[in-house]
Length: 432
Image 1 (cartoon, one colour):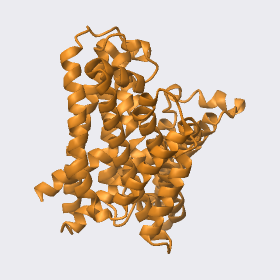
Image 2 (tube, helix red, strand yellow):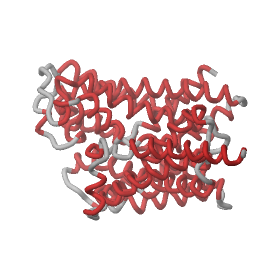
Image 3 (cartoon, helix red, strand yellow):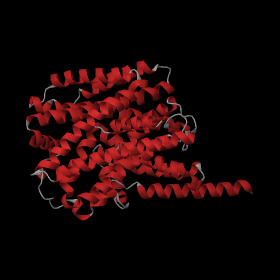
Image 4 (cartoon, one colour):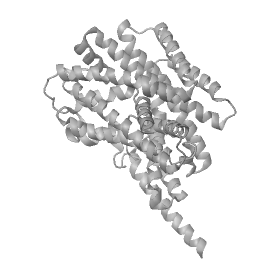
């Protein structure tokens, strides 16, 4: 079982490690500079810690993420989980992975954008995704034993080259990193939005352990936490390494985004072959994430509909293929508002799962916390669409941490407390 735990941990690492996870650490490294270490610690807490907690939270349930939402109401559990799977699956997550893979592997070689090249790349990409996804029982071995080592070796080559060649002193921290590097890194890790993906990946991990012979809830929770820890250690090493070499790279601050920073780092280290190496890293990262999302979404919708798993895998892959060819900018423009709405709700559900012994799993606590969280996150999502709401903006700006996207935090606590008080009142009235 120890071997299975390591293999599943490697699989989970590869599933989490998508293109976005490659891009954020370099930006952090360049911006935080001399404050790199407190910044990366904050990033790791939310960019890795919360997703691992989410995977572990799924091991507490019998079937899927619906059970977390069922504490609020069964209809809420169904609707919220469907939205999560659609958002991280065929509507946004999978198409974004494919288009990022194209833009960072093929486009630099072509030196221009071509819709025909994107069509060809996504055609090959999604055929390969579908091939692996059609037999999910073999996915652990294919990803955990084959693709993850290749991905790690490619990253290691880039990192080692950077550690040898880049010897620039750390620059002065800029922007918010100069004032509060830890908390700024903390918020950046939250914005990776891996906690939502973890709700989907968690059930893959749990189901795999069941297929390997684990049956008791305690054993599954323990094994899931161990595999999550293995994945978390791997992610922490990669994030820290990529951020560190980016911070020490010459002229790193002159680039606009993490993709440009990584591309330039690869070119400086390995010349033209560096572009090819980076392309391999990004394509593998996008591929493994896409396979995991297709499998997770297909398994979920197969449970709640009469459509067989294999047909759903085909449908989800084809829908992702069509949307991917609309281009990355279009995908991001429509995905961000939805994710800004869903992510805080997911975090609160995850945290309540572990805190439920404190309030004895009272439904009113769940309902209060989720209702107040949803009000604020819905407002934030609507703002991301470009809709101005002047009347509400004045009041929302008064919420603590609203300027950094955490305005929902205090309302969630207040809503949960109100729910706890109401449950006490109802209990007292019932006993009279």
